[in-house]
Length: 135
Image (cartoon, rainbow, N blue to C red; front, side, top):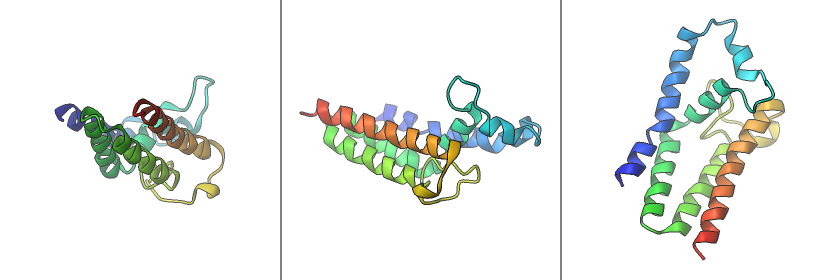
């Protein structure tokens, strides 16, 4: 399960980058970099902040899911991924609030809603794929 543990460090690294970003980026440019769409997907800085928010719970879920996959327990991994999808919708992990706050999913709009739904949708898609592979 060493690979699962290493994979679990990624959200921590994203959170560290989010902590350091205000020191590397001019304060007046940070909001623009978090919200500006350039036609090539989501703003990179917003994705890094979102990935890092709730990093402790995210890491535990990722490690558990990957360890379950390694053990061949794909349905168990599906469960962890579906829990992650629900927690993402409420901001308990991958909060789209730059400060890491929680919220109700129906209160989000614009880019925040898009990012939240894409993160949650990715978890659901992976859970469905693993569910199909477990048959």
